[in-house]
Amino acid sequence: MRSSLVIFLSFVVALLLSVMPMPEPVDIGRPMWLAMVVAYWVMVLPHRVGLVAAWLAGLATDVLYGELFGQHALVMVLVAWLMLLLYQRIRRFPLWQQSLVMIPVLGLAQLLLLWLDSLAGSRPPTLLFLLPAPISAVLWPWVSSVLSALRRRFNVV
View 1 (cartoon, rainbow, N blue to C red):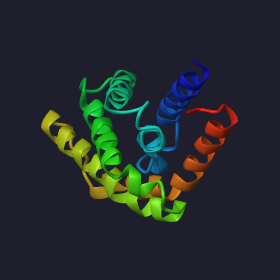
View 2 (cartoon, one colour):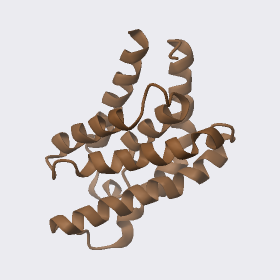
View 3 (cartoon, rainbow, N blue to C red):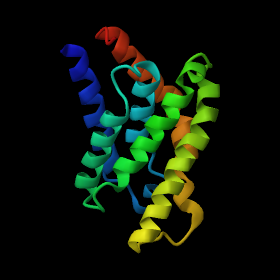
View 4 (cartoon, rainbow, N blue to C red):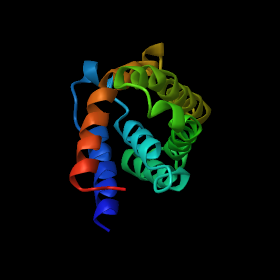
């Protein structure tokens, strides 16, 4: 029970970080907090956190942002699916190599979000839309380290 609460609270913190106010010039590069948390938990606990958890987290993001229902859910499922395909290899890598793998995973998520936004009629004006993927990859070692420390502290298995 306690381990499920740790996972749930990490999703809640990621959602809160996703909507935290930021200055306008910096907001374009807002890290993909929820995608990183989904990727981490799917990578280390694929038997507990999978596509359903990613879908629910994405739906929570859609409700929080007030955007097209299911848009972020589909993106989170893509991230979870890619991590499920790669987790056996990725979790053996050092953190800096995991960061390099996260660039295409999160980049594909951003491209899917761009495509869904353009279908909904609200396409961003520049390719700076892809900036959160490399920024999130740079932050990956710290996010992974914090979540690993929480996992060890509360014995989440």
